[in-house]
Each structure stands twice: as structure tokens, then as C-alpha cells.
Length: 287
Image 1 (cartoon, rainbow, N blue to C red):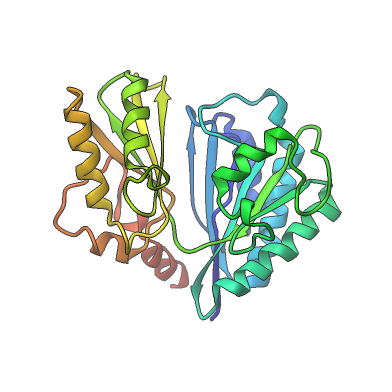
Image 2 (image 1 turned 120 degrees about the vertical axis):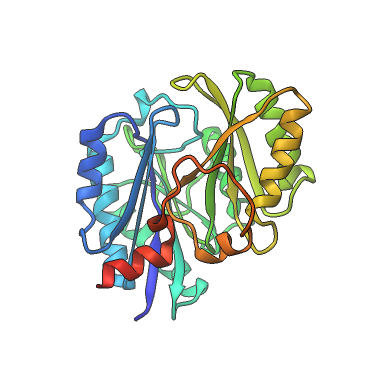
């Protein structure tokens, strides 16, 4: 079976009823995982299946988000451009990244035509070089940059960033400190765009509900930089500032190969469990 994964991020992590409604738009046989964070005010859903089924589910989830989330009143520490903030498609089995990019572009057109929600295309689906990187879209969008599909901004849902990419590990390293400047310095030092670790994107964020700060990480290629290498560097930089690591937190699911690449290293997981592995969740679902 040709399997596509979709991992949309929605700008709501505090109102359980809203997140439930968005998740309910995805058929239960497709939904693999959901996670929410109150400080980020953000929820991540993971679902997978055939291209047609996944694209249809994604559209309905975006529809539910547009109906319920008002980005004009949104607060949260994570950057965002809209209610249905980012919608990536990832090839899992017998499907190519280019095919996922085609799915993303087609869905972007549907999102505009049905919901009047303008769409930016990023990563493999990008039409403009300046929009390949998600962080660039987030910088350009507030400046009134024109979307790839549609025009203007939705009055309550903003815009949506749709694309196709390889597996990404969304991962947070939490620090036993309230020193936001330290977290931001560490994030800047490990960020690939600053000459840090290859394939690493990072932000320093406050976690008011925990009384901590966080180095929030997107690892875009774990074959280039494994998880344990990032962890050890963050720990070293934190200790130089007199700070210890509280633990690390997985967002969504992780490919088994990413864990294998860091086998034998203690990453001080706070929330990892056996079914946090993508392949395990897919296998269990098929039974």
C-alpha cells in the first residue's frame, strides 16, 4: 500500500473541545497520534493512509480549525501564521516526495477554493525559493507577502502553510531554569542557519506553566545529525551556564531509524513510550 503521512499543526492547545473537534474530522482509522501544549498553544495531529484518504482528512481538519480557531485573539509562545498553521505531507511507503508535493499543491488549491484560506507552499512543494524554508514564510507573512494560492488573509484563520518534506523529528529539550536568554543563546548556537549543527532548527521558548525554559527543536534530517549529538551539545552549553537538563520531550511520532541512530544514549525522555514509534503505531493499527 502507498502510504502518506500528514502532520498538521493547529494553533490551539488549551481548549480541549476545539482540539477534539479538529481531531474528530480525521477518520479514526487514519489517526495515529495527537499532542497538545498549553504554553505553545498548539496541537499536532499525525495521521497516515492512502493519498486520497489523507488529503481528504486534511481538508476536513483544516475546515474544522477555520470554523473554530480565531487567530486574531491567539496567544502562545510558538510562531504561527494561521489557525491551521502548517500542513506537511511525508512519504512513508511506495510514494515519492515529488508525489507528496503534488498532493500538497492540489490540497492548497482546494483549501482556498472551499475555505477562502490563502495558502503558502513550502519545502518540496514550494514555488518560490524564498518560501522553501518554513521559518522564512513566517518572517515574510507578517509583512504582507503574497500567498502562492489565493490572496489576502482570512479574517480569523490567517493563512495556511502547506508542503511536502522528509521525516522531521519535533523534539524539545527542557531546562531546569527560567533563564529565557540562556535558552535563546543555546538555540542560536545549535541552529544550522547560524553555523551550528547541520539539519537543526531551534528556538528558545518560555514554559510558564512549568516554570522552565525550553530549547524547541526541529531535526529535519536525523541521518545527518542524530538526536544524541544534539542532546549532548545542549547539555554542554547549558552546564556552561550553570543549568541542568530537566528532560526531553517528543512531539508526535518518531521513526525507528532515528532511535536506532542514538541507541545506547540516555536522552532523558519525559514522555516516550513504545508506541511513540511511527512504524509501531502503523503496525498496531493494521492488526
